[in-house]
Image 1 (cartoon, rainbow, N blue to C red):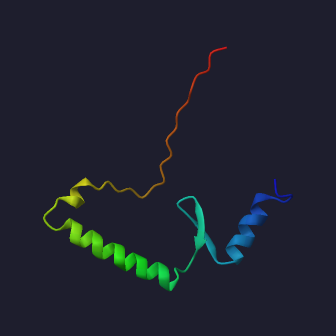
Image 2: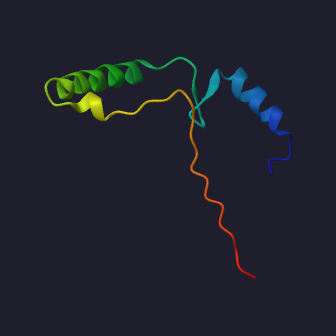
Image 3: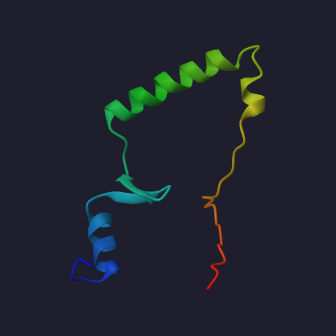
Length: 75
């Protein structure tokens, strides 16, 4: 598609300091804005969690899941 091997693209992205997380290429080190956003979101989650049962509704996993739907076509 781009006229070179996929591994070449991956090598260049790694050389630029990018890493593959959650199916996206993101900077390896978060910026100051990213850090501030994380702190803000964490504060909101802490406030939501107190006495509301919010944390009981969260499902976590350490793997990336993809929905697979194998459709059988009629001919």
